[in-house]
Amino acid sequence: MKRILYIIAVLLLVFAYMGCNEEDYTIHRIAAPSNLTATRGDTSVFLKWDRVEGASFYTLVRGLNVIADSLLTEYYEDDSAPDTLTEYRIYAVDNMGWRSQTYASDSGYLGIPDGILPRVPSQFKASTDDVRGCVLSWSEGRFATSYQLYKNGEFYIDVVGNEFVDIDASTDLAKYTLYSENRNGISINGISADGKKAYLCLDDFEEYENGSILQPWTQIADRTMFYTEGDPKIVEGTAYSGTKSLLISNGKVQILHDWGGAQYEGFYAISFMARKNTGEFNVYSSYGTNEIYSDVNNWTKYTYRTGLVSVGEAFNLTIESRTDASELYVDDFSIEYIAAP
Image 1: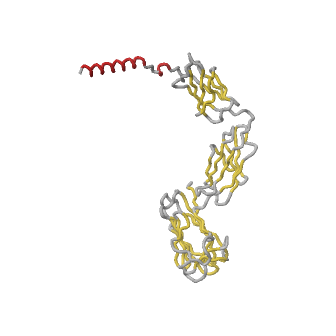
Image 2: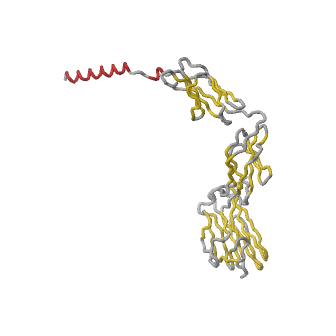
Image 3: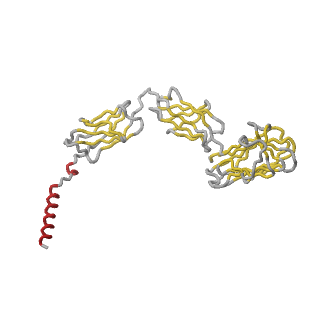
């Protein structure tokens, strides 16, 4: 028992000795700099801070990058500063290489020199596959504070930032041109891209075999199907565009947007081209449409717009030709999303 107590006593003495000789490095950490200021200049950001007693040098960080190490002075000129607001941090370092545990910080960016026009933006992109509209994005032009956007050669809108969604874009290609802008004027050159809004769905019947029957519950897009009665048939030689159209005789075709319903709140426009030389056809929908047309000798476009549709809500439109055996031709069936104002 005495031996066990002796061993415990020895261990306690060893631990006490080690604790007395353990050095807490945080006690010896050098003080952090203070009062860092970042002053905006035309072509540089000027930084200065208070001297730290015992500092061998300073380390300066901009954003996530060290931009100056081993600084021996309490000031620095950043001639590669960005023209957007960025955080600067300054640390003190002692002669043992220990860096201050904390830092001083300030934010700064370049000023815009008088008479200097902004640089043209780069990487300008215009979407063609977004049903919400044409999504425009770009990389910032140096010295730009905003952007002027032109559409098909005419001024369209002033934009701040580097993205814009043209919710009024049509489904036809448009030419967008972007210029940088600041208080001195706009960039000498612009950058252009072609874009448009995508249809939610568009079926011109070109993908079907000639003479084939458009079967009930034919899916044509996500959440969108055709329901048919009377065996409507794909035929060549009578199309509005392309080579094929849909022939209805004593039957109907219904387009349904369902199975989860609308993804976006807003309005939806269902359009199609139709021709029936003699006789009538009826168009009706789940949102109140009920029209009868007769003797449509030439291809005519019909467009029907829903009321405000909530997310998840379904809607449909039907074209029916049953009162006579005359042939009704339909082409370019589409649904277009229209953003709510």
